[in-house]
Amino acid sequence: MHQFRFVTAIAVVVFTGALLAAQGPDITGTWTATFPTQVGEQSYTYEFMVKGTELMGMAKGNLTGDSKISEGKVDGKMFTFVENATYEGMPLRITYSGTVTSADEISLTRTVVEGMSEQFVAKRAK
Picture (cartoon, rainbow, N blue to C red):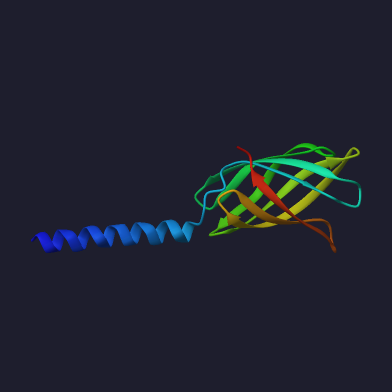
């Protein structure tokens, strides 16, 4: 009987660990990045909230102001979202794809205009 309980306990631990690994690291929180673009250096703060596989939050850029994040998805260490920004009074849809590289760093690629992508790293704010 004791052996059965031990095996059951081990199975629960292994299953829980596998489930957490499949979900990937949690990127909920505040992230900051500064990177060069064709319109000058940009500084961003991203506020992410993850619920299941859905990514929500806000992006705040020095050239675009506050923008709501939409269409956010998380799949393990990979995630995607859209920043619906305004630049010089015009709406601007910026698509992002990202990868969690560590608990405190994410690698992002954003496309502002088809064919024009920018790659940069964001760090978790502490």
